[in-house]
Length: 279
Image (cartoon, rainbow, N blue to C red; front, side, top):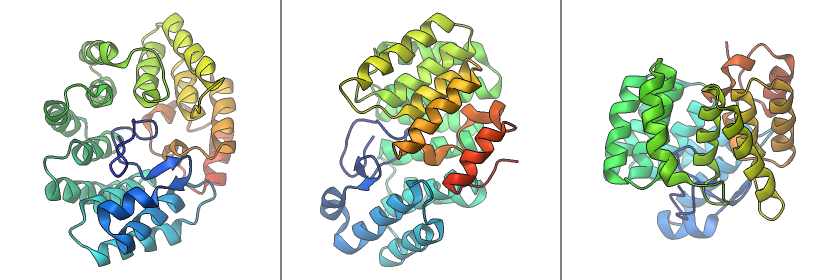
């Protein structure tokens, strides 16, 4: 789901991405889309916001600078909203996501960014309704369907979640370099639904893939979290931290970690990354 580079959705959950490699901003693609000054500010802020032990104050300053340069930049609003949601500032971040969608209403990426903001902000009905609109725009992107399924599950409607995940399953296939995010949602659903064999099979696909391609181990950790294997979840989160995972910036906001909030190892990792500890 790259918005600037239109890469496969390796790093975000229906959200936008400004990185061609883990932790590095894609300034070339950004420049061509936004113009040098706005692109540099937005990409640098994104790099700060996703980096372990990142300079969060600097990141927010860069986002605000990008919006000063162009208050009507949908990308800048979406990226700033994403940053705020990552830091559990949902009441500030969701309006930024909404503004991005208003500025670019035909962009599935922009709308999906708002959908995930609703999900982590516990606004599941809104996530489902808007998620359906995203699927209408891009019916063949499995992650967009998975966001709807995820919302149903978190809302306490596992049957509807299962129906949506089955639709996504046909689009996902095995874990590959380009579909790691969508595959991890499916693996997590297998895990929390008691389909342990299928969840472990998905983990094996990631392990096999890692022998010859980059794998973000955050995705493996979230499947283990679904299996309630906290030791393995922490092990893979630590590997994600060491590899400077883009996804690990979502550790305080993603719903996969709700059962681990009291785990001191989770709290320690949150502290090291520099994220607010969930209440």
